[in-house]
Image (cartoon, rainbow, N blue to C red; front, side, top):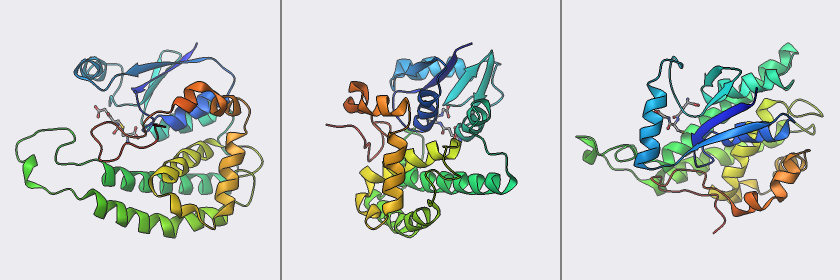
Length: 233
Ligand SMILES: N[C@@H](CCC(=O)N[C@@H](CS)C(=O)NCC(=O)O)C(=O)O
């Protein structure tokens, strides 16, 4: 049965899932929700149905089963397509990097989405002050210390060896966010740049990165964010 991915019409948390689905050879489909009152209404109906214990976006449907939580989806697809490590040391490294990326990604989201009005207006939401430039500066500092650490561990073609594992898809997408958000971070980190280039050359992904659809671009964050990024204007 064809896997279906449901998510908003941005890269957001779904792009690593899209990349892993693009890379493998089985057909898959996308159910795109528009960021509008109508799209939100459609989502409310799905979220409140009984077929997901904790309805959230993104989710995938595979063989009648719905899977939520982006990292769980990546692990699920990694196992399904033979891209989940089996060696205990590899699993530990993969999960450390997976969680490091999750932490950094959350920091970046906090610098981009104003918590006082992103989902409101709610009573009391006017009391806070959101300072995007300050938070971006803090984030830039953190990644300038973190990116060299990625550079240090990327000694093989991919994180664990010659072939990509599910974490490589998370890693590429996060690095690509950094490329737009804090581009100077890559200076002197040649292993990171070589990793990104190798990823873009992978079978099926190479065709994607050369496609018109990719060149059109898509926003990283939703329109309510202080920084959307990613779209080629
Ligand atoms: N931990 C979750 C976070 C999911 C999440 O925050 N999803 C946002 C979009 S990025 C959403 O719109 N969720 C729908 C909702 O909360 O109703 C994951 O990694 O999947």
